[in-house]
Amino acid sequence: MSRYFEGYYYKDDSSVAGIKTENSREVLQTVFRSYPRGITAEEISNQTGIRPDTVRGSLKTLENAGFIKRSKYKAGRGRPGKATDNPNESRSFSFHIENRNFALNEEDAYQYAPGYTKYNADFLYAWNVLVDEHQQNEIYQLLINLLSRSMTKISASNDPVLGYVIPRSESHRDGETMSMICKFCGVNHEARDFIRAILLQLLDRLELTRPFIDFLEENQFVLKNSYGYNRLLDQARNQQAPKKKQQAKEWFDNLETDAKEMAELILKKKPSISVEQLMDRVAIMTDTPYPDEEDPGSYITMNGYEALSVVADE
Image (cartoon, rainbow, N blue to C red; front, side, top):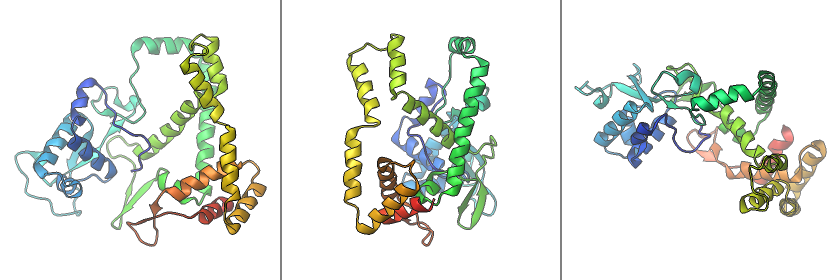
């Protein structure tokens, strides 16, 4: 499963014990990567090099803390070992990541999905008083439109980096196809995380805009001419910094002849794309390894001309 957030998310302070050791965190990350299939303790030990008894101990702690779930090992995927008194020590079980959003998790002990948090009762009361329902619906529709346009761009793009990070409806491995829908909560964890990452990035970017900074100043939420205030202004100006434009000009001028011709074609056909945006897009595509379709299991990167060709074909 693609990961869009860094770190681990827990529901209460007692859950921290589940991820306090490096081994537990590595075991949890390995279970995460196995989504939606799940993984056995033996497979985790083989992949991580962590001793089997340590893996079993970590799995028990993670399960008790609500980070993972245990289920019977799927028939036909291997020969299960002999069951023991402790089910966590048996190869008859596989382990699955299970985190849930707020609506699905109010009565359960599972950890929160990435990006979620628990609000206290006083804040929720204030929010319901302050935020008009009509405004909510207007904003919701704008956000849905943003997500819909994003999905349309994804489906129309042949950008391999996008293809690597977007949420999938199915997982393909070892000749087996499996739905990405979680068999426990009925939600595609990857799609949920991707959508929330898009929306949270929007909020992060809002805090770097001049109108937002002016709003803070007008309501005396920031001390004018303080370090924090000046730092926010610098970050807002950096969104359209002359330095970035100069960097983009130098990048464009130094392109090889065929790549420069391709870039000129893109800028002519797509006036909404700036040189800075094109430079950033190419940098991401050339720096990010993506799966090689001709050699499953290996990764390749693009050169500048290939990246520009992908943008031009969109």
